[in-house]
Length: 246
Image (cartoon, rainbow, N blue to C red; front, side, top):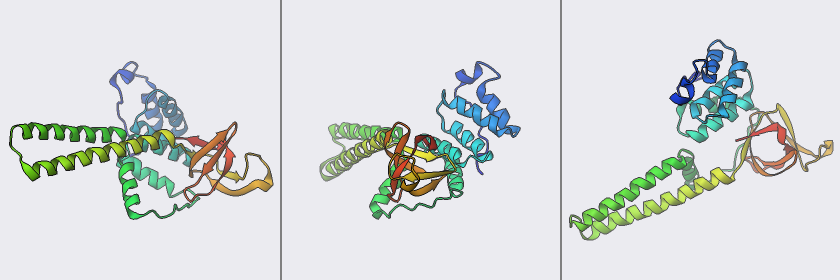
């Protein structure tokens, strides 16, 4: 696997306070193949620090002790923070290939698939940066126009392109924000989970089963239970303790 160990200092202030910091201990655990201890230390640290390389290390530690579901959860958390990170992408795909369930989503229209591929690679910060650059471009255009360097059709064409790009970027940013804030996904962390037609643990209401590492969307919840939807549209109820939310 790529990125088996990423030794980075996320914050000089945080880790310089003590030479025996939690992060340094976790790294030593990993290097000496004490993977369970490393996973516990990285997990504890994740309550204080949110960084893609921390989740990469956490996923690697979980993978080494055979916790496929927890490893996928950690890589997915890292991918949310850094969707273009090659090591996270590689490791996530590597571990996903070992998930028992092979759930295929319905094919999208190619333009929809292209749009989703783009939006998955961008963070809200990326989109804010792009929008800021485009606004700066409009400002530069306004200054140039006032100095009489651009006239007629070229002026209007550039202005139209920039305004369209600003509107499109704003729409994509809102779409990304809604997706991040409203959609709630989770990873199955139990070996086998019975999916039921109702939030009641009865043998006759099992409709299908899912396995460790499968990603689900949570549509609703109640104490002890969540209703999940799979990529292929199947849905049902499972105990909330069998998943870990992203």
